[in-house]
Length: 176
Image: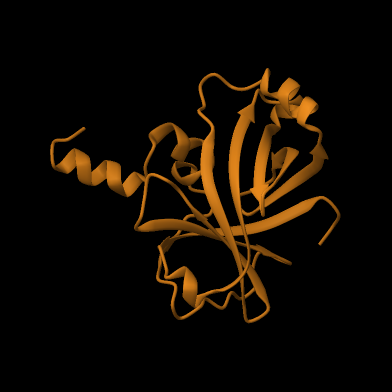
């Protein structure tokens, strides 16, 4: 894969029993979107907590298609993180999630869980090529692929405060 390119597919899954996964790391993330950059690139900063340590990253992405994007990511200091937060998008609330990274058949999956759901999660996998075969763990129930579905972007989930399925059910029940 060329340097700086990210090929990724995403899936909506039922939240699995985490004890049954070959977990390699778990991190807490607060992700804040910044105003768009040059060429309408998407910019964000993350505050990452892992094993009692805090780190910060800045990422800039240009979307090429639903599964491929050019990505530039770097570590930033706490001071630079604070300065970058001044450029946050006012139309987009930060997303809070816990990322569980696990191995299955030599594939490194990332399972994102959110405080607004104890039943659903988003699982993603970076690939070498878009058509690469994916082997899913038996103990993870994939509901559907959500690659390219903007309703499941972190920004959309943060703003909605729930998954689109929950909004549909609430609307049917007259709650919305």
